[in-house]
Length: 146
Image (cartoon, rainbow, N blue to C red; front, side, top):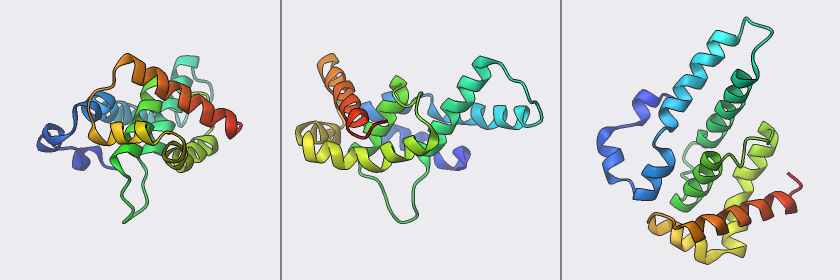
């Protein structure tokens, strides 16, 4: 992932308001993660704060990785970015994050198609929508024992 090549000022302008809201600090967060990773490679002991930031960076990297020639639907991206931004993925291992990444969109499509349609439009979520999305993510975690 090369954030410098992946982000453009023009691209940001054409994003939906919801996408802009959920990803506004992600590039910086990812760059900081990569720098922390380099700085801590040689050190055995790191603080809890650094450990937390490194684990969050791993989740950012997990969410951003995508198979070649397999674009993700916008609603799927928004669900993943929402879960990342709200800290829902913080306690998951990388393997569990992969399970979430690979299964949440189908789960949402099967169980909550109205929410998926709303996300596809890309408008900002109100508090009720966010509460529902939190509940749906929690249900996915419970059903998948994450």
